[in-house]
Image (cartoon, rainbow, N blue to C red; front, side, top):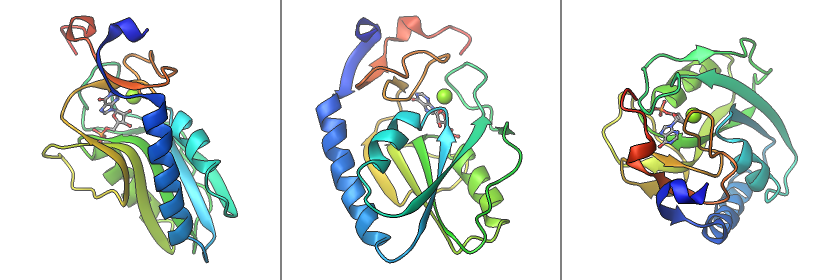
Length: 181
Ligand code: IMP
Ligand code: MG
């Protein structure tokens, strides 16, 4: 699979080192509060497993399943909620977890929906943040790495559902991206 990458951006050791730092900051910020983590499937599963095991706090975990891509590399701007009912988060401190902040459509839409359930606070944690102009304004509170506006795969991130199990993150070779994407 690694031969499908144009270049590696972050190897496994670099990602794990950064997760140590992020987990320490999150653990410190939430030391007196009970956290509810909402992980956005499927992209954040690897991050969720590796990050949450580094946070020694009492916390609840829920997952939300959405789709916006329909297999290409560009967002359609429209979000489909596959899991309709939201977890009970009234009065709770919610940390949304996603793989990447790209156009902002996913996190802005989910944030709006979560707000209607009356949580005490909402913060956002993403492993990657693309430096670009977003369709929707969203600020992440915890960011693993900032990257250029390139299509990346690995460590949970997919192209047509492939490459999620790559332990590193890299830029996918352009010749492998379908012309219609
Ligand atoms: P947004 O709604 O455009 O911010 O995109 C968020 C979702 O699009 C992420 O959760 C990913 O599933 C997907 N996505 C955005 N950029 C990439 C990328 O470079 N590689 C793989 N998936 C991506
Ligand atoms: Mg995806």
